[in-house]
Length: 99
Image (tube, rainbow, N blue to C red):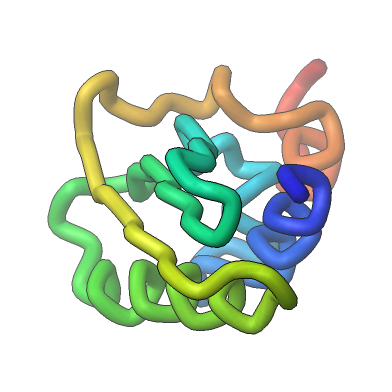
């Protein structure tokens, strides 16, 4: 099920960055406290992101489309702070960072 959640998370983009939130390293944790429930802990590239609510809602909505998932909780945190070192190699290449 975790792979399916990651697949869904990979469809969510911060409109200001052409890389999905999974590859950006914005997802800190995926937990399954019950078989039909998922808790996602994530951050944003900046605490003052003006579309934070929109991104959190999109994460909630795309994960909720999975068969067998009836409850999704998205926890937004800024501890630890996000940094570019959290990005995957794919994201680094896409954004032109040295790897």
